[in-house]
Length: 484
Ligand code: NAD
Image 1: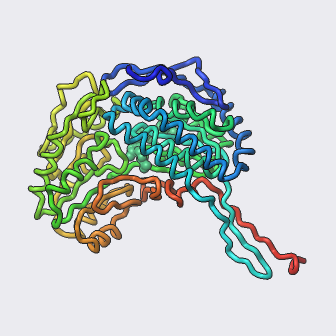
Image 2: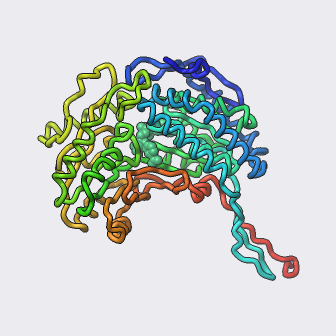
Image 3: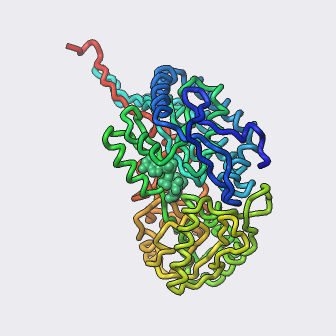
C-alpha cells in the first residue's frame, strides 16, 4: 500500500511491550472498501495488565520533575516529526483524508506536543498567608487516565489528550476508535523507548473495551471525545466509581453571515469550514444562516466554490483532491438517510443530491448544499457529520440568534462581519463553548475547548485545559505560634 514496512504491522502497547492477540480485526480503507492490516483485539487480560503497569508507573512518573516531562514530550515531538510522511499516509489510508489534510493532522498533532512541552509548571495558588495561616491549593496529577477517541481525527485528538495528561504527571491508556486504530497504535509504539514502561499504553479492542475501561475502579479519569449519545453512556457507566470526566461531544454548529460581508471572499471560506474532511469535523459549520440581503449572491458563490473542488477516492495519495470519502459505512448510511429525507420532503438541492455513481467502490459522497429547508427538517436539526449542509436565510438579529440557539448542543459557531462590535454582540448571545469571528472553525492547542449544553462536560486544551488532568488539594497550614 505504499507505506514504509514498519508501518504495516500493528500491535497493542502494554507495559512497554508490543502485544499481539489471539483475535485480530482489519478495518477498511474508505476509498476502496478494501481491508487494511490486521490489528489485535485486546483481551481483558491485556487491559488488566495495562492498568497494573500504569499504576506502578504512576508512582514514579508523577514524581518526575516537570522539566523532565517537558523533555520527554519534546522527544516525542521529534519522533513524530521524523515519521511525518508515513504517519500522514496511515491517516489517509485509515480515514480517507486527502494526503495534504492528513499532513495537516500530523502537523497539528506536533503543535499539541510542542504546546504541552512548553507549558510552565502549574503553580500552587496561595489563598492566604498571614501570621496565622498559610492556605494553598496544589494541583496534582489525577492518576490513570483512559483516553477514548473518535475516528474523524484519530491522531490529533488522541495526542492532545496524551500531551496534557503526561505533562501533568498522569499515565494514559489510549483506546482508539475501532474504525481507525492504526495511526495512534503506531505513534504509541514509536515513542515507547522515550518513556518509562506503563506511562503511555494503547489498546485496540472490540465494543466491550470502552465500557470495561469506564467501569474499572482503578481508572481515575476518562477523557472522551465522540458522540453525545456515547458521552451520556460514559457518564452513566463512570458513575459507579465517580471518575473524573471530560466529555468532548458533538455539535450542530451554525455560521451566521451578516449583510456587510463580501460573498466572493467569505463564501469560499465558509464552504471550507462546512465541508472540510467531508464534514466530519466536530466544529464544522453544519447550518449556514445568511442574511437575506446577500443570500442569493452568497449561495451562488458557495455553490461555485464547492463545485470547483475535486472530490474522490484518496487512493495513491493524490494531491489534487479537496474532499475524500466519508470514513465508514455507518456514517455513509447516516448521511444517505438525511439526503433521502430531504429528497422525500421536496427540499431544493442547490448542489448535488444524487448518489455519486462515479465511485461505487468507495464511501465518497459528492457534496450537497440544501437551499432553505424548513428549520425543523432533519438536515437542519441533526448533526449529519458528512458532506451535506443546509443554507438558510435570516433578516432580524434576534430571530437568527434564537434559531441558532434552538438546539440541544452548543459546541462551536462562527460569525462573519466587518463590524467588530456587532460580532461581539452576537458572540455574547450564542450559546456555544467556542465562537470564531471572521474565521472558519479552527481549533488551536492554546485555546481552551469545551462544549456547552449537550456538547460536553468540562473541557481541555490550552493552559486552562491542563487543570482537567489535575486534582486540587487544599492545604491549611497553621503557623506554629498559634497551634495549640
Ligand atoms: P462514538 O461516540 O461512536 O465513538 C467514540 C469512541 O467511544 C470510540 O472509541 C468508541 O469505541 C467508544 N465507545 C463507544 N461506545 C462506548 C461506551 N459505551 N463506553 C465507552 N466507550 C465507547 O463517536 P465517533 O462516531 O467515533 O465520533 C463522531 C462524533 O464525535 C461526532 O458526534 C462528533 O461531533 C464528535 N466529536 C467531537 C469532538 C469534540 O472535540 N467535541 C471532536 C471530534 C468528534
